[in-house]
Length: 325
Image (tube, rainbow, N blue to C red; front, side, top):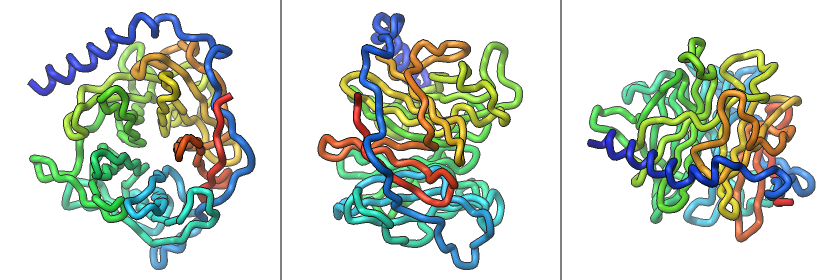
């Protein structure tokens, strides 16, 4: 029954948007996200004590405002001395989003193998506040998991009926990079997966989306963006559709899709009237531009938009103002 209900939800959304989505607006008719001014650094490569290792890097992250008004930044630190996949979550705290060099607060979370999480596999935390509760979606290397908090700082995993921490996984491998958008009373969870052997006519790396009414029960996945020109020239088949982030701006849905990290960081943006349709295969019709940033997250504070992203050398996190031009 849950599967049928979730399928009907997705079909209803697709039918509701199909007319306007069939003819996407031209790029010159929609606002374009533009970085507005200089970047300021909020975090550096942290001191992990016994888990320090040369080459460790802060990568996929989440930023949100806690109940006490402070700003929280949690990042996946990879290539540490931690066992398994070497990853863990570290956190920083700032009084204002415009502050530089937020205060390091230490290791925030590590994998819990007793709950079925692969050792050292934590990836890409994202936090959404809904009705006074903070929901953290994160990857454990194979699956998307959930933890909750009332203060936005201390999170406890949500355990499912099987005694595990996961919500869902697949259809591809390494289900990761979840973010959740609330729009018109529904929750859209965008995430990434990749496979060396995609089904006929499918791309090897894709951004998927599942839909929910309660943040716990999710529909079957839909491929909402993959392939196209951003996939050209990417050496690793699992890297051309990473770190999805979707913004609802004035009724249009903007997708930020990542291809490259490091000094050559590359992120492609799309705009659509349909939150489940940004272009697959060779469809670049909704692509509007590319930016030299990696794993961006868009934050709105009292009408002012900001973009947070990785430092070019993967040695910290930075923020800049964002405007729609």
